[in-house]
Image 1 (spheres, rainbow, N blue to C red):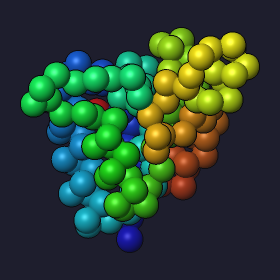
Image 2: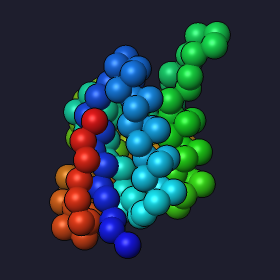
Image 3: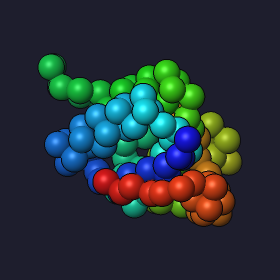
Image 4: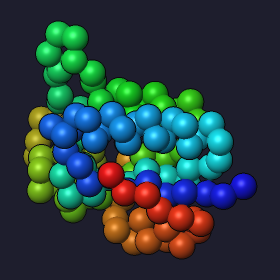
Amino acid sequence: MTSTSVLITCSPEALNTSLNALAFCEELAKQSAINHVFFYQQGVLQANGMIAPGTGDIHLPSRWAALAKQYGFPLHVCVGAATKRGIVDETQAEELGLAQSTLHAGFEQVGLGEFFTALHQSDKMVQF
């Protein structure tokens, strides 16, 4: 079975691209293995736990977390890119003296080294 790394660099503001990425990952997970999904650049905003969608809008962080849990693949968020955009986990929030974490449950902050290691263990990579 082939394994795929998925790189998400699109902002949640690019809703069509974000929904296409979700749909692609769902279909891919049904057919083969997703090694991991890595959120980088503006894509880290998909892991923002403080997003409050409007009535009838899709809550992207929850959709990503549910999909990853259902199919058992990790959601990795670049710690450097996320921190610059105000997305921090509990440990960082405490270290920075912030009141709370802003990273949505189900996502994990990692360094770029983690991305490259997982990439070398994958057969292919797809970017959105």
